[in-house]
Image (tube, rainbow, N blue to C red; front, side, top):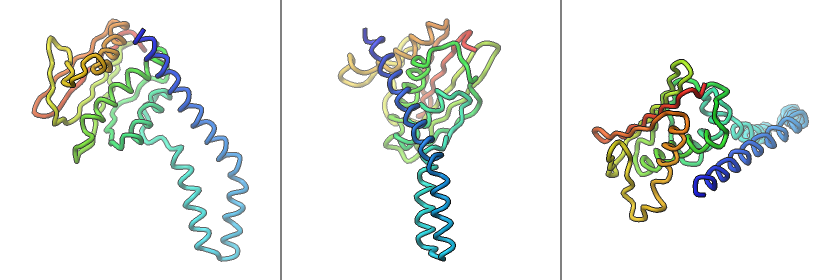
Length: 208
């Protein structure tokens, strides 16, 4: 029940983000002609301060549509860029994810949102808020490697991550969800921590 509820929530969030982006894109495209005409009038009248202010507003609207990180997959783009902007972190992304995966959109959302939100929480109070992600393709298999600095204690037992929070029933769900998705595709998730750096490796078989 918990798994199904999480699937539905993540899938709903993905579609909401997608619709918001699409609506904003339509709005800007529809208004672009009149906006450029207005900017041209400011310039013709030599009202440069007004033109500069108006151009700043237009640039702000366009920036909100920008994809800061291009992963190669539209669903992953939405999830990753939403987390980058909302969590105020920097992601060093290497590699490309195929545009089509043999996974549901909800599974993709859950996998990447949990992976990056856990990393964002770890670096939240640190000066260096960089999270590194490397994508590797081997035949039909997808391998994801993520690393981030951490100041918090990390407990790993039998290759599994254990939560250090008091309410263990409500926490640690994210890592379990990632493991369930990986196992569904005959893969695995492994964790390790060395010299203050936390590493996650996700192997997904036959997903390409």
